[in-house]
Image (tube, rainbow, N blue to C red; front, side):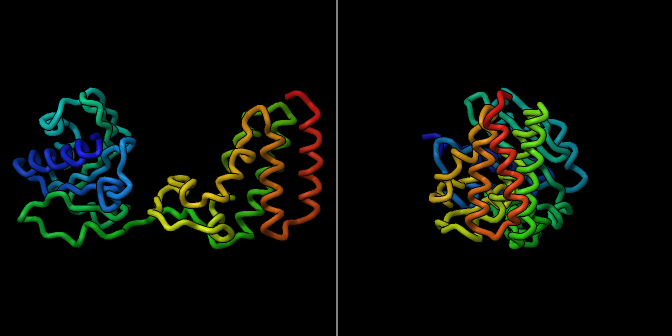
Length: 260
């Protein structure tokens, strides 16, 4: 099973790191970290490697240490601290290498220590710290009015002929604002939340609201339908401005009568 291979890959990596100089710890994240009950065949590897400060560049610039576990078929340095990689056997992973002094400020979710050096003195690496992004809001007035104006401007853009811009204003900007306040209005199923993206496991977290998504995401060719579904939802949960609602409804009626 792939799930077993993921954990074995981490164990093998820990063994390699434990034999290297200047390495301090390996921390697994996500479904291979503290959320193991949700690991499945679609999971991948997420982890941090912690080294002595002055050797961070060495471990970032040469991934030979990782190839000792399994040869790499693909590697892409996507941040100053980390990579996205694909092993020859098909396992995909994303990781970062940090110096020990970095860890006081690194934004990280709860993690699982797979291995640490006996010499490494640390301030509990497995606890949440750093500037976690705010993907939820408790200010519905701001989020809902921002969504309304996104819908309005998106329809204007589409009618002007800027169809792609209009599509993004609705199905990206407006939808993200709506998703940020769903927790205030919808019944939640208690599952692991991803602090970096409300869309992760969303259908399981909000199964009833998820049924509304197909209409809100009607697509590039049906911008008017998406706008109508979003407007109807916002109107059902909040006392939206009736003049703005009227103007949006006029635009929806117009866009439904023209061929974009």
